[in-house]
Structure formats: structure tokens, C-alpha cells
Image: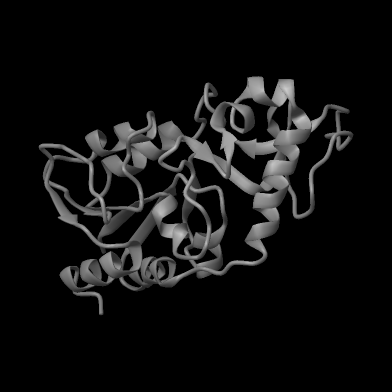
Length: 226
């Protein structure tokens, strides 16, 4: 049984209708990134941040996993599969993936401003006055710019044990996630699926310049999973 590690990004969820994190103009849904994805932005205007993530959370109930998500699930039939995702949606889980590590948090969770140890499942809008059990304000369970990525060490350990790595829907340009590819064993085959590939590495990488769903079909054939 092979250990297949899938490192996924926004390009996977894009086919379900979820916008990629950052458009070419540096904005996210017409907002400056620093206003809605940083601790400083949350301090300046918490209502803007609450509203932004409330809209993203509501959108999850309107979209469904796409073919790429389901093709990743198919890998589990004969392999151990770990999904390391930069996405904050739950489409991998809803498609059926059983082992998903979220690097950048989850929209359907919130946590106390006191720290990440007080984390709760959350399905509705989050507003000022919603408090944790210790009386502190709750915030989106999202890793913002300038914050530590708590799961990065787990992710590094996972890729070090990979027999096959599939990088899909992400350019891996933002650290620390970008460093994952350099922890993959030298002999491990890496499939890189992206319609506009940018990764440059001396690693054993095969580039598949397709959208996520089309690229996964090709990888399935290469792995003899059809």
C-alpha cells in the first residue's frame, strides 16, 4: 500500500464555484488582503472581518465537491491517502476524504481570541458578542498573515513519508506551505497539476498543465487507478 500525499489549494475548490484566495489584482473579493486576513485588520474593523467570513461560510452551503475532490477520494481504495490542504472549506471531507489536514484553518470552526486551544464547530454567522466559555470574543478559525501555522510540523512529517505526492491547485508560493515540497524524499514522484504551473525545482516533478479535475484523471491513469 502506497502513501499518497495530496497537497491541495484554491484551484481544486475553484471548480465548485469558490473564488481563489487572491486575484491577480491582489484583492480577495474586492477587499485588501491585510484588511480581512490579518490580526491588525481584525483589530481595526472586526465587523468587516466577521461579515467577510460569514459570507464565505454561507457559500459552503451552496456549493458541492467537484470531480477533482471525488477523484482524490478514489485514491483511498487501494492506498493510504493524506490530504494537506491550504483551503479553508470542507469540500474534501464532504467528498469523502478521510484524512485531511487543514494548514490555514477552517471556515466551519471558530476559536477564542485568547488562543487556538478553545476551538468550536460553527455553522451560523459569527458576530461581535459571541464569546467562548471563558468570556472572550470568538474569531474565525483562520490562520491570518503574520500568524503561526500550527499544523506545519505535522505536514512536514507527513510529506517525509510519502511514496507519491500530488500538488494540485496551488502554486506553493506562500511560506511555510511552499517549503513542503523540499521535504519530500528525493526519489518520491511528484505530480504537479496546474493550468499555469510555476513551481521550479530539481525534484522528481512531472508537470500536468490542466485544471484540477482533468489533471486528476491523468494522474489516476499513471497510478493505474481507473
